[in-house]
Image (tube, rainbow, N blue to C red; front, side, top):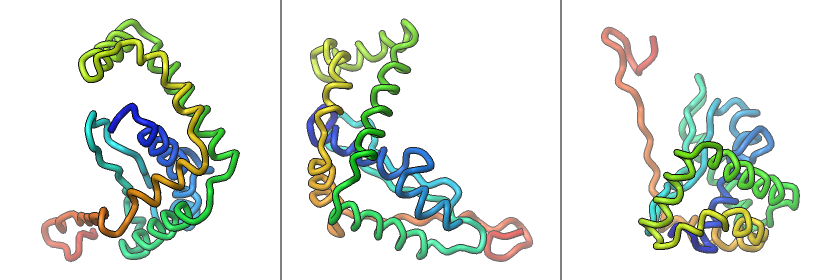
Length: 171
């Protein structure tokens, strides 16, 4: 659930996996030209949520290759702690997101309303940076081991319909 220590660790995990060129999915999927646009992150649900790994298949590559690369990165995350620089990057990204989210009166009002309506405490707006700063590499590894299991996994592969007069979706 949102605003728990586990959620904070999951958000750091999402940053490590897919934020920027130094992220693990960028290194494994973009640099190897399997996918031009991998993403990992959680939804914004107040209660139990969904963490998504997604990637668009590059021309000439297969969904199987992408799925294997993502699963390999998940396993690495479960068995090897994240690097100190990855943790610092996630903290910096969280700080930047908080600051960017407070740039207008409307954004502040929306956040205050969200915290008040969903958690009964608009003062939570002031705790985000501190919460992320407390996340450790061990926390990230723990949530990966806890939630990224085969029993919790659903793999969805979508393939566009072929255009009229073509086979296999290609033109």
